[in-house]
Amino acid sequence: MEEEKMRFILISLLSFPLWAAENSIEIDTKGSNSSIYIDQIGSGNTAKVWCGLSNGTYATHSCSSATVDIDQNGTGNLAKAYSQYTNHAGNEYTIVQTGDDNIGYIDADEDDNELTISQIGDNMEGEIFMSGDDNVYTVSQSGTGDHYAKFYAFGDDSTWTATQSGTGNHNAYIKSCNNCNNNDATITQSGSGAKDGDIEFKNNPADNSTVNLTQSGDGAHVGNIRVEQGDYTVNATQTGVSAKAYTVILDCTASCNKTVTVNQFD
Image (cartoon, rainbow, N blue to C red; front, side, top):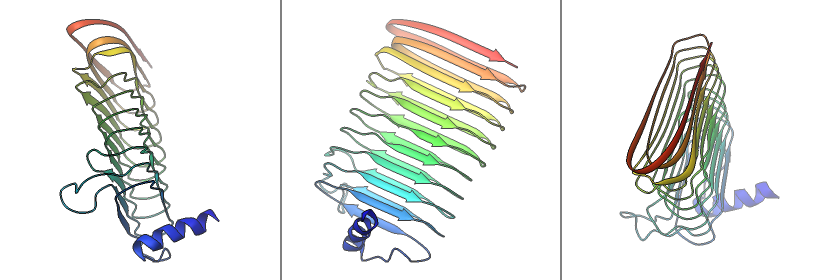
């Protein structure tokens, strides 16, 4: 029943056969109660959803209660979900890709948010760009292949997570600026391969935020944390037999209270 509903939605919007070997779906939707589900299993893949656009430079935005769910299984992959600059509401986009070339990208604006990219294997790359409101981001990548995760956001209640594991190099970045509010950020990277983790909160008067950067396994570990203004607890842990380096910068341009713990173990 669920499959029939999904098929009906896609065909009514696109007149596009779901069984086409080269898979490729693009949806430009504008308003109101939203709900888009895409499920592709074989070959070239590619699924793109613009939630609130309808041509022109951002047209007149909109999107409303949204929920976009893209799920691709194997080979080319590439999934993108955009909400174009203001006039949004429920948000909640999820991209799940299982094998091969991957690349998941979410660009969202304001309101209730809750964005997720989860990729299981091969040439993973997940990016989330956010503007504001209740947030909860998550990129979780696993298995064989290089891992690259990036968050860039501006505001509100936050909660960030990037979890990467398995073989291959790991790079994870969390960056925010200007009133990024309550924060809390966690990067955890494990497995073999070099690891580079960066967390930067600038011009951000956070209240009792906790920043965790944990890296373990084989390969050189590099960690960089920079926080400004507000109350922070910073925890940095690196374990493994390879070289380890941390840079922690605490830049108090206004009243602030920071606690820092750095652990490095063989």
